[in-house]
Image 1 (cartoon, rainbow, N blue to C red):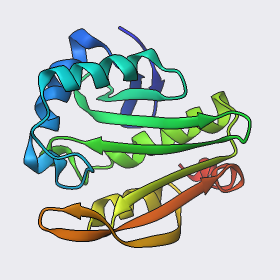
Image 2: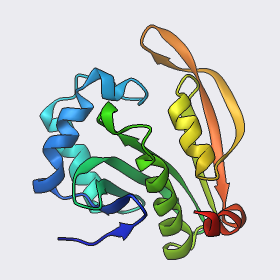
Image 3: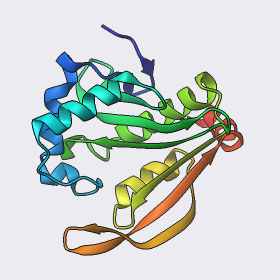
Length: 182
């Protein structure tokens, strides 16, 4: 078993086709899971296989599976568009099963991901965003130290209406201030 990066509740591990693909494919085709994601079903198996293969290759991104400490796959967390020259990247994550949301798993995953980005990759700035109506993502980002820096009104068409995109960021300095409290 791959150890990965551990928090208090979760472990971030590299995506593994055998352990994680079927969950990813099922989740991306579940309207309830996708309610607050930019993707909406249907997503073909071939499309998901292409995404999964790209996510596993790395390059300028790292995508982790979020697992409980006893190995249950809860969702995914990514660091995208890693720009080493300028020390920045864009982050995002989701907890798939609604029964596992609002239990601290997403917050713990975001904190572990921040530790990876700042302490392992040496980045200085993380950006993220969430759909304006997604209060759980807002709380998770706030608990993980992200601060709102802007809002794009009506940025995305989602379920019959345009919704705002709330833009957030976490600096290395803020992370260093907060990590002792986590």
